[in-house]
Image 1: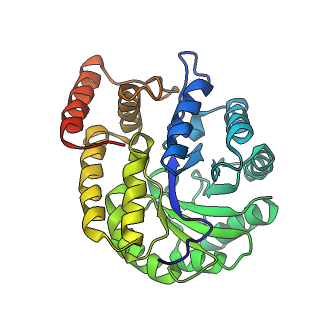
Image 2: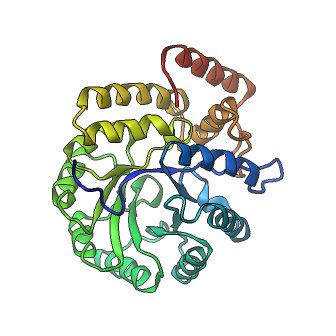
Length: 305
């Protein structure tokens, strides 16, 4: 078995739990992260799945401070920054590092169309000013930018840029990126496309960032471990099962609706309440009942862990 890179394994983009007043629910954070640690996966805070762009700076700091004080040294803590204000991103990268973040995951600003040179300069600026190593975060679904792979390759040689978290739905890009970086000891390729988890790992990707891992972290960890030890049949089985779980909250829903649906499943497993942070809202009572019914039926066939 190959030695793992520093950035590897499973980093779950954590759903941020809120109370009915829209404040971060630290009691539920503890339940979620304790479950992560039990399954040997790592928390990725304030990402797309975590409603990061909607959370106030004060609540973000409260969350990271809590996680840092209680879990630093017990797990790797990934935290996202992605404001359109570069100065704010730099300041937050420093604050989050002081509060306990091990890695800063950097989104492109999503408002203005950027040139290739501007994308390069943006990430270089963040890397040069971040006290912690950074990962590039490619998610055109929300930023409306795709980080070109030739830009990623150039940035991969910066001493403070250690990986790419790629959520772009482009299989040719995945194949090319994995081939480019699978043998690099100093740069990691992390998969942010749940349906291609097994595929990408079997090709040589270094790890996964699966939203379904919020309530099934152990299944993704077992998938990862199975690929590493050569048990591809078991890994493929886990891909099919986690695909079924993902459909319960993702199928025929917008991104925001899928997050609301995922929190219904989290409530089912007693991990957090289903409160959403405005402008996102809960689903209808009828939709929530259907989700619970579907997850109950799946639970009879699939061991969810």
